[in-house]
Amino acid sequence: MADEIKYEYKTVRPVRGTDGWVISKMQKDGWELVQQAPGTLRSTVNFRRPKKPQPWLLIGAAAAVLVILAVVIGAASALSGEDEKKHESDKSTAAVSEKPSATPAPTAVESAATEVITPQNNPEFAALLKADDCDDANVAFATRYEGKTVAFNGSIVNMAPHGDYDTRYDFLLGPGDKGPNTTAGPAFKYEDVNILDLKLTGKQIPATVGVGDKFRFVAEVGEFKTAQCLFLLDPVSTEVR
Image (cartoon, rainbow, N blue to C red; front, side, top):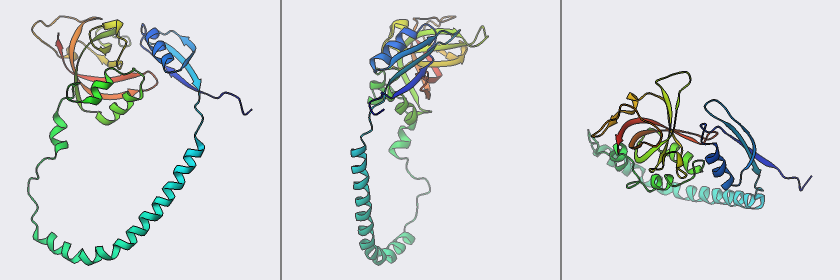
């Protein structure tokens, strides 16, 4: 039927205790709750929303423009071929006379490679800390900065044993100081770590940590798990605030 509504579906597996938060975030983005099934560590929540119609007319027009552009570029390339041949011998002579440097100077990108990303020096990270935990900005940031180091003030939103372990945990972290009441920013996760892995620093280092504790997190960027809306990080250091 031409008027039949077509849906797209999404399954999210939030850490237990954060179901309401995730459902609220998804509903704000237009998703409809279909089913919710509780689990030991994570719940399984299914959503759906109507698919947006494809702008076929605009797609066809864009394709036509690309074809025309390709023809124009090909023609320009052919016309410039003769000029390139004329200068080819001169370029070869210049190349022979130039002596490459034994230790080339680092580029701006290489110099910035070791820089710790913070909300103050990176507008993308500043915006990410205020975005929805399932927003596409999470995927974009994880893809672009995977392996880089970030630092932010945050708190522990949730803490649960990892599998059957008694001393290894899964930590859910959020930006800011609100702990389990955090409502903005990514759902950062440290997975399968013990207290020593946090590398606690500061004037008064606690023997243990818990939900609501506030820290200055320094971590390495990992992948973003779209199905669970979880942004994985690896701890570098954790400073008590």
